[in-house]
Picture 1: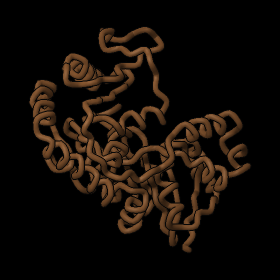
Picture 2: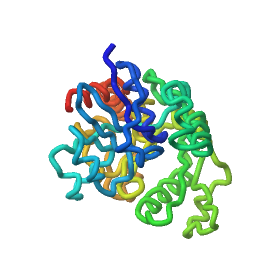
Picture 3: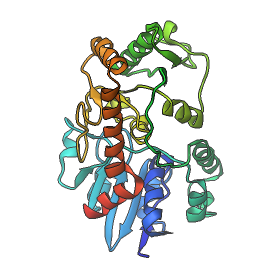
Length: 314
């Protein structure tokens, strides 16, 4: 089995890719002093056949130019369409993915060097976060016949558009008598709920419960996250074979998700009633979209498929 040298200690954002690399390669940690500052960051740096590869899972602000200048290929989760920084030749987009529990791999790969390079408290925080994430599972497709819809979200301080879209979705689901709804906004710790008091939910959901409830949902919402980033939820929704109602992407993907094939795209919240009516009245439409999303995930988004894409495009 070929060896890949991991050159830093990334945080849990990159867990999906460490998991995928470990499925196909032998991983060996070799701290590169050039990249110490990227320890405990959402960036995975590795070397294969003398080629230096960057996987940047951060919010879409800009390319980390000092890494771009030394790498062979720079992969980004959030390759914004309208950001010149991401238009450079070596920058390539990634498929949707989400953090998974890789505690055993994390400890086995980095062991006591976690304390040396990131410290005791940051190590505990990463382990706690990883333990709370669900293990990776490739779900089998199942038709969703119940009328249950789950949606829970934070209220973001500076993302008014995303907050509005999510509030409208919550309000619509709560008002539609056909829907058995659970969820709502998580109240902000500073008490500034930005006027969304009617959409609040007192309960908080840990990641595993969130995943379990989402898997039973007849329809799920995807909209741009912080700074236009793709939500972690999307890849898990596709994996679970759910009907995804989505607003247009602000980032590039290696292969597009197609409207009315892999998911249902809308441009504004006024379209919610028409989509829900069709979902409830046309079971074949609901199944076709759900299965199409699952096929997309199975072909392009599994950990192994993503690693194959990355290695092929180095």
